[in-house]
Amino acid sequence: MSKVVFITGASSGIGKAIGEFLLVKGFKVYGTSRNPENVKQSSIELVALDVRNVASIQTAIQTVLDKEGKIDVLVNNAGVGITGPLEEIPLEEIKNNFETNLFGPIEVMKAVLPSMRQQKVGLIINITSIAGYMGLPFRSVYSASKGALELITEGIRMEVKPFGIHIVNVAPGDFATNIAAGRYHAPLVKGSAYEKTYGTTLEMMNEHVDAGSNPNQMAEAIFKVIESQNPKVHYKVGAFMQKFSIVLKRILPDTVYEKLLMNHYKL
Picture 1: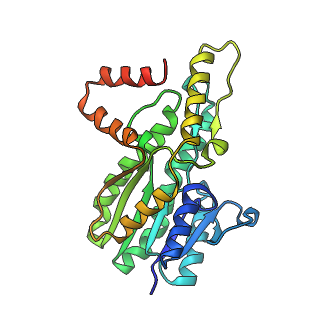
Picture 2 (picture 1 turned 120 degrees about the vertical axis):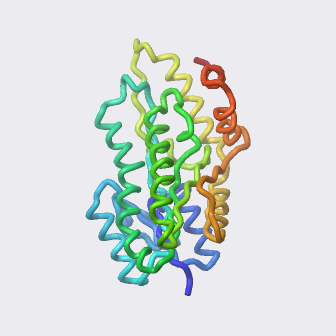
């Protein structure tokens, strides 16, 4: 029997690329979207799910379990970007980011784990971010939400391993997707103390996304994780310098690393 893969946030971007790639490889793929009826073209079967709504999560998971009798692989991909000076980001938007990037994936894991535990086998792949390994200027909230998911994964991985379930992190760098269009970004405020520095950084971030790697690179990485007999805890996917930045953070003094980042962002 084909493995059943459940991917959150699969109507576009990385999630869609992963789903289409795995479909070709012979997997039975279900993706999610908040509004599947609005998705005009999708080779993936989409079910309605909003990661900020627990009832929606449970209904979507149960729908697939009723159809297939199992979920072999969960790819926790749904997420949202957020940028801005921390001082100028409304608390409501910070909470929404954590609801989507952290609390939502936790609830999806909680919904799928009982069936995996019953099967005595399962794989959960949490899509985090290289930005989650470091606090980045004007992306502090995003870095924090993705970094928190990395640590949650490390902890829960050990809790469920005795049941034959593996949980891993896959941290992408910049990929050419529509994430910039869908993220919240604090508006550039005329006369703000951050007007110049935030404006310059925002332009740089948008350029990085536009010039990002092909999302199929992520799809191939996810396929390799699924095929692995003994998956690792952490995977990083992206440009060499983005991955190397994590190594630099580990080996350089904090103040030196901070200076490198500030130079990079022209702060």
